[in-house]
Image 1 (tube, rainbow, N blue to C red):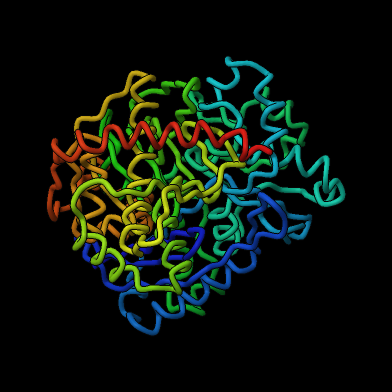
Image 2 (cartoon, rainbow, N blue to C red):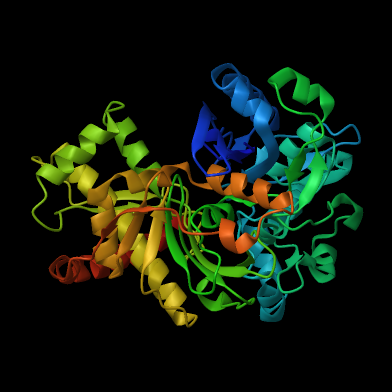
Length: 489
């Protein structure tokens, strides 16, 4: 029996799992990761910590399931998007990676926007502070010595590939988030590269996500009980690979992503840019497919932050309390913008706000308001996609937040669409990466692999609850509009 290994490099954790050719999970492992915030708006990670996490996860898989590791026929990769990973001529990072939620390059993004809407449409969305290209301009201004030492630019998952195979490569879906890719042609954009002023030789070759992009080094295979020379697929950006994992690849297939950040994603059979509302029109992780996506910087991470503020309270307990006391929309409003916001605001300065506290406010009310705030941001995302002509009839839901049927019900009601919860849906992009690994062998028909997994339950929207929330959503929007100038100050 063949097995496939999927590795997903997230922001807060690295996840790895082994599935067999019936897509049963044989083993899985998770290693925590931490970001650093050395300056206002800054969010960074040490790239060396990523490889240490991979080593630890592979060691755990080998110890727990040596037979499955020996049967792995291919490896797939998924990773957080937009980070800036610069390597010197010895493939060593020249500085910590600037992550997707690093907002320091806001001014540089504004400069790139002035290049015009035609370029924004070619690259899928106007330049945003978290993207790679504006960060390169920021480094040129603030850390020119580090940029001068750089000889290669990679994305986070691609650094893992370099360790595994010795090959530098990326794929169209991850490259899409650099603001350097011609999305329709699925190749580097000469205009964007020239605008940023980097040497095109720094950019890796682009390989489709389901195609081979290197083979496993013998040394790594020996250490972890794998076969030397097995294929490593190109892989993709975590959101798109999450879509692969639930079969959201055909035109119109949609899902809600509720992990540390959040996404409202719709697959497409062509590049359909809609830059006016900051809809991200990017390449998908499989050939001949694209997507439209509203990308929000704050998802289930907001609930984790509230739990921390409440003394590192147990999240399932907090959710149970909020659900037990739920009697309709809460009295508080929470703006969930802990890390700024992308769609639809493009505001790296936005921050979290709790509005309406009284002496008798309970922690259950605070938790409910956080859940509602994230749900309201999905309403903004839905409307942004609708302006671009995309309407959603139903969607899957994936990510750690999907474990909460209560939160899912709030989101379904606010969006007005039924949400499908999948068996094992929390595995997310690591599962999709394993599917890409399987396809990289070139044996299976993608139509038989890229299918929707079993649906555990469907959460229907509550029309009465949607009506009750409508004025609260408008109040949420007014609160942000009133505070935006203060955030900027």
